[in-house]
Image (tube, rainbow, N blue to C red; front, side):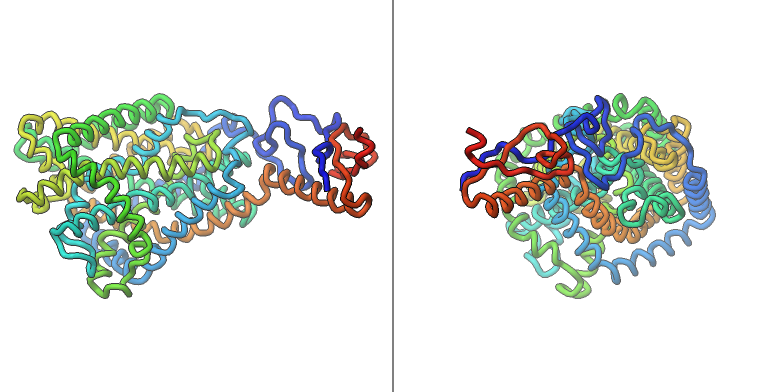
Length: 600
């Protein structure tokens, strides 16, 4: 059979031509298919209107928890601790399965036919340059966490490996420590963020829906329910998780900056008053950044932070154990992929009480922590990703930050492990925030300057993250507006600082620990929400205009081939020409098969 590509699908007539400005649902040059839903008006043109139910309920609940923290700190800590213990014991398996499921789902989307679908109109350029895009989502996603755990986690796994694996303080323990750290900080956390970010970005910029987590569920529960009580409850939970997660990080950031002030000799100790002052300064800084706008504030801070973080890593790479660090790169990658399945399958059943305790302190804790942050990070990543394709989005959100995390932990962790193996007891340092400064103290000529850089990094990492968080809470409070009113952004920013400051003044580290527990508890319903979100997104993608046109094209060609074979045997051709309304290229998709002689 000879098949000439001369006629494939119906051509446009005057009623089907594209206007210059087209809907995200109808990419330029597309033919509208029967039954396609119509997109809402442009998100950029939608005015910011306060949702009194979402804003009011979230605000009241937040104030109630502040009051609980002020008047019943011990009660708050006890209740949240008991709830967390129950969750880890009874629902840990669900976190393990869900986290790995999100990795598989995100990678499948990138490699499937859906990967070429744009998060916006066809041909639309990305809003931010790739470097700035990566810097912003990295700072928002886990920047301050890298400062806390860049040294401490590899050290912890080296001195106390996962139960039933390898002996402590050995070469095998070093390999296991790096592989386990990468497991917690590379593909899994960023896949968790990617699922939420992709669902919101696709719904907002491709389908024209509001940039709300509740709007993602329209394909499953319908627009009426998504805009009703169920949707509002989802958005309230998102604000609640974002607010308390940000407050916990603000408090922890203040503790690390306070420790840095002590390490450089600027004060003997950082008491509650000093920590509160640090919180006030950071709060003012991130509110100022937030009201300046995402393009001016977060992008500028994130770019500065990437430069400073790069300089710190370069410094440790040059003056530290350079050869060991270089050796750790392939070794860590190899052991990570070799042990990935085993690490992803760890549950209490594989190691008894010891493994259950270890998982609660590390893997399950991390998965719950990442999930509790998805309303904030996912919405922010969606906000800055307009114009990317699904494949570009997944590659950028998962692979690029994972590679940066690999380099970061190889340099900081490798330097710390080298000192620990050579007799410097860094693992015994008091507090997670002290271990990084302990490494810097091993370079006497540079310790002071490097410690100041670390404090600046912690401050900017938090400011850029809290900046994004306050904008996201404003978006959730104002019916999905991507440019929320500054007064609402300031309100949520001030409340974030107030939560952290009150808890520090009342209970110090204990209160912050209680906040961490609350964010993990909040992850339980969001884990279920995310699973449903995957189902909703998959259903939504099946009806995407590009997918429909591709399916229609395949159907037309297949029908034409069958018809041509039946009418002419093996010798026929398909012709592409203007439609004339008689079925030969008409808008309903019918195709006429032409004898080869008619084409000569």
